[in-house]
Image (cartoon, rainbow, N blue to C red; front, side, top):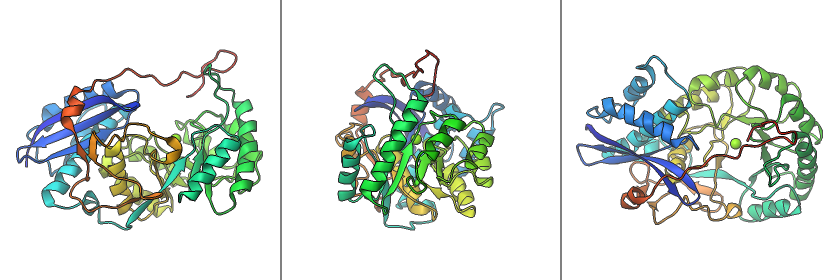
Length: 384
Ligand SMILES: [Mg+2]
């Protein structure tokens, strides 16, 4: 089965751009993939168009060899742009192979190990009584793992870490008291803190307040996280930006983090994600996949989550707390994973089990979007 076309569609659907990739074959079977480098989709389109030049004509079943060739057959290998391109291609090839063999993608990954994929939901309100009430509503609807977001970003785009950590810690302590001991509570600090600020934040809460702390600091330096590991006992959830197994390596091998926020649309697709999962299993680190994109990302991650032993929760953006985001539009993605309570049932359709209205996305255009450029009160740049 030969690849005949690779078509990237960087299109605005609902409230965000999605970089959807279609791969066609000479037997009429096609596959869908998605790429996850949000905000830099056009750079990834350029990489996909380059890879297309030597992938057309290749056997679509040679997924592992194609991964190696796209990664290694260049002098300047790796990096987030190229890996995001490889991810979408790899996912689409899995979709093709599953459809051709008449099996769900998880059967290509070793078979399913669970029937339902538990998720964690995020609240959408800043720390306060309404946030706690929203968490309570999510619990009533079946969620037992909930993620909060910190205080401190004002309407002018000013973020002061020291103001944020005090306010946020105060409300997290109240949330734990109000919601009880059995619910899993975490927070995503979106790498907006320093080592010292993170230590202060954690020290403002009794041990046991938080079950996970997601990305408190930037991740370029594993040694900084190692230092932070000695200053708090809160488990870390890290890795949504990592674009290869080699980026996970120091974190896994040095025991820095406890949850892998792996993103199958950025790490290098399902091929690379399964290797990270195996490596993590050997170190008893659980997979907690990042899943902020559209239904193709969700479907690929559901298959991944079904096939790995070491799994905690899949992120979902489809909970009632986040409302209608539009990028799961059922008129565009006419077949897609759907939550049953707080879990995604594992289906048995061949391939990814996603259908896309290609005529619709052909007519959609790309919309320029840039993440907020946060500043401190003194005018200096800080992380978004
Ligand atoms: Mg995150």
